[in-house]
Length: 99
Image (tube, rainbow, N blue to C red; front, side):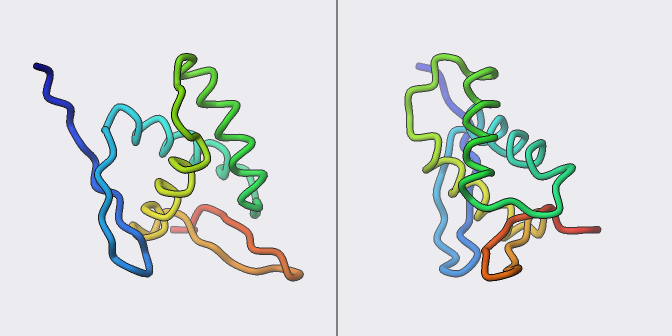
């Protein structure tokens, strides 16, 4: 039996931990960072659309909920200080945190 490595994704507000297969977590993390890299801020819908395109290319057979993994990994990246959420002109946006 193969042992899969799990990444622990932590919700920034509740502190709740979710275990996600490393083989799923890493491509989603990379897709989110790739999407936000040259952006001043994206809505969740824009981010999810980008991630969906990237994941379909990288993991063509992926059948699980892309939107669920996108939000779960994005929240974890917020907890880790990589991504931040802010409001501009009444819109909730996501961007990479400047270091």
